[in-house]
Image 1 (tube, rainbow, N blue to C red):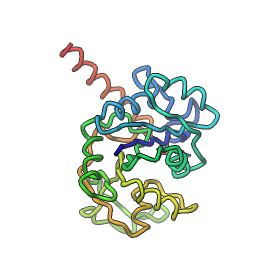
Image 2: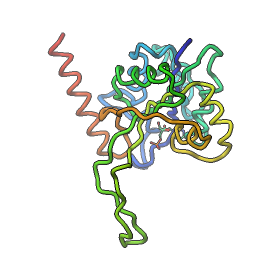
Image 3: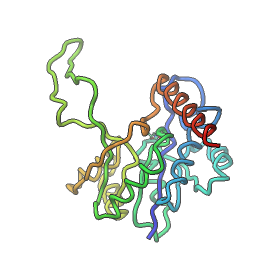
Image 4: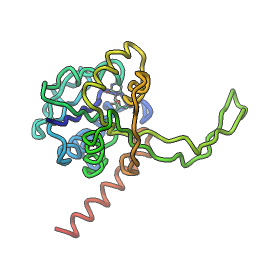
Amino acid sequence: VTTAAVVPAAGRGERLGPDGPPKALRPVGGVPLLLHTVAALTAAGSVGLVVVAAPGERLAEVRALLSGTGATVVAGGASRQASVGACLAALPDDVDVVLVHDAARPFAPPAFIDSVAAAVRAGADAVLPVLPIVDTVKEVHGDLVTGTVDRGALRAAQTPQGFRRAVLAAAHAAAGTVDATDDAGLVEALGRPVTVIEGHPEAFKVTRPVDLLLAEALLARREGADGQRG
Ligand code: C5P
C-alpha cells in the first residue's frame, strides 16, 4: 500500500500579476515555490511518491529543478482538473491513497499532510481540510448588497485533499469537462461522502501579491527557528 501526492503546478498565476514566470516557479526566499511544496510533501513520512503536473512548455526546466527530489514530472493541462488527471494517469498500480496538493500551498506542515493521509487510511473515502471563514460574507449584484450569508456553516477548503484512489479516479472519470476548482467537489458530485478535518493556517494558498509577502515572512521565521536550533 502506497500513498502518492499529486501536485497540479501548471497554472499561470495571473492574480499574482501579469508578468513573470508561472506561479509555481516564482521565487520565495530565492527558491521556486514548487520546490518548497515538493520538499514539504517528501518530508511527510506518509508520502511514498510525488507526481507534479508542470506547464507543458516548462517541462525540461521543472524536471531539472526537481531532479534531486525524486518527484516525477508530467505535462499539465488547460485546467487544474486536467492537470490532476495527467498526474493520476502516471501513478503506478500499487498506489491506493492519493493526496492532491496545490503547488501554490508551499508551507503545509509535513505533520498536517500526514494527518490527511491518516484520515483516509482510517477509512474515509475523501478527506477535506477546512477552516472557518473569517470575513462576513455578502451576496452582491452589481454594486448593491442583496444579502448577508450566514457564515456559520461555511468553510474554506484547503489542500492536501486525501482520497481512496479508486474513489478519486471514479470522480475524475465521471466529471468529464465540468471544471471543478477542487477534487473533493468531484467526489461530492458523485454523491460520495467527503469527511472534513481541521485545516492549517500555514497551508494557505499563494494567490495574490500580498500572499508572497506572507510566504516570505513565514519562511524567514522558520529559517530563524532552524538557526536557533542548529
Ligand atoms: O489558480 P489557482 O491558484 O486556483 O490554482 C490552483 C492550483 O492549480 C495551482 O497550484 C495551479 O498551478 C494549478 N493549476 C494547474 N493547471 C492549470 C491551472 C491551475 O495545475 N491549468
